[in-house]
Every structure is written in structure tokens, then in C-alpha cells.
Figure 1 (cartoon, rainbow, N blue to C red):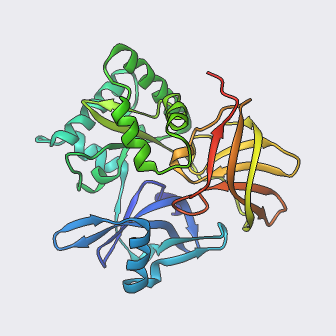
Figure 2: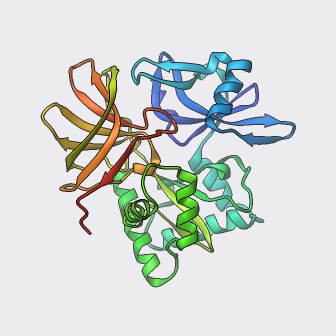
Figure 3: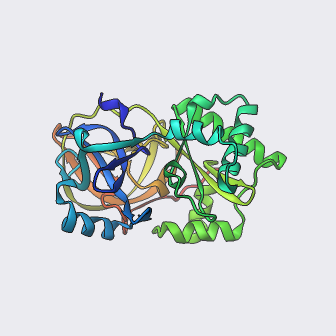
Length: 313
């Protein structure tokens, strides 16, 4: 089944490579993904984009992949070459059942219990990032996966309420600065924080940051795309229903361009209906004639952004 591999899952190969799945479904029989960890000795080492590409080029070029649908260089693995599938749902259940969790796992358990007390079903949650693989460090964040758009927005509201009563905390100035520096985004610090504070998809538990990641069924998009060059526009958002999806989608009011597609987590949930944004990205033309702007056309997305210029609280 193509649906058993979803974004935020990890897949492992026999060579000792762990890839993060980036999208549900297959292309040319392969799972679209990106190399995140390489086995060294008995442990796993996390790798950055350039290091990942270079390692595959030298050692496992069969996993380098050019997606014709996305007109982008990714990594991809045939289903038959997947040695182990790391499932966020299954891993969270294992953590919740542990008799001697470490400090990070205990924070994760405490967070889940708070959500359960507010009526959240544990079946709608999973864990990704380092906790999914059991390679967490003392400084690791908690990356919660939420299955279903309605569940996700409900939990965002719960987080807002838990911050108000003090069971969770908002990020402080140092936390926001750390988050901003890690993102390396093309917004000013103040603009970055303004956008993030109203999303309620991250907060602190016991001085540890956690993030929410929405997982929904893949969009039925059979079109292929060709890049038309860089573009910068100021446009109005007319539909934000898919703003927190992966990729995030924002319908815009424009004569020839239909929407903004965002593959960069920094700009997920970035704008709301009625707001005007400055957007910088890659213009793409679909095989059906529709045009769109892609933010995150490369993994680093240098020079690409979504920034609200008419701000409404």
C-alpha cells in the first residue's frame, strides 16, 4: 500500500541509512524521502543537506532521485529496499509504556497526558525526530505528529489554553532566538517571532520545546511542474484551509497564479485569509496550465519566504 509511508515517518535501509519520508505515496515505485542519519559504529549520526547528498553520491547513488512531478532533486527508496519502517504512532506507544523513561521521554509522556486530560485521543498522536529513533540527547526537542486536520487545530487551541493556565509555557526570548537561528530564514527576528507566536504549534514543557506536525492524506495532484524562474509578489490570501499541511497551501488572489505551495516548515501556517503577504519563491507551470509559487524549492530555501505585510491579530 502506498499510504503506509507518510511524511514524518523514517525508513531504514540495509546499508545503515535512515531517511525521513517527505510525502505520502510513491513516484516511480519509490518512497520520496531525504537522508537524515548515517550509522557509524553502534550509533547514528545526523547529517545536513550537503553532507547527505555527498554521502549518497559517493556511497549509495541509487537513492539520489530527480522528481519529475516536483521538478526537484530529492532522495527516494524502492519499497523492496526498505529494511525497517519507523512508525511515529508505534514509537509513541512504546514510549508511553516504558517503565524507566529518560528525562526527554518523561517530558513527552507528561505532554501526552496533559493532552489526553483535555480529551485528545492518543491514537491521533505520534512522535518523530530523534525520539522516533531513540537517539535523543538532553538538548533534543519533542516533535509531536498529529494525524487529522481537525485534531491538529483542536490541539493548537488546547496548547493556547494550557499556556494561559501555566501547565505549558510560551517560548522565552532566548528560546525564540535559538529557534530563529536554527531556522536561518529570510525574515527579520521580530517578523519571525510575530508569525510564530500566533500559530500555537510549539510551546515549552519543563523547559523543553515541542512542536506539532500535521499529517493528512496526500492531495490528489497528478500534474507535473516546470520551473519558470524566481518571482516576488505582494498578494492577498483568499483560502488558508491547507495552511498547516505538508506542503502548506495558500490560495491567492491573482490573475494568473493560483496558489502558494510551501515545503519549508518555517512558513507553515504563516498567513490567514484576508491578509496580504510578500512572497518570494520559484514560479512553476503545471502540465494543466496552472501556475503556482513554490516556497522551499530547495531544502534550504535561501531567499524564499512568506511574510505578512497587513497584519491582523
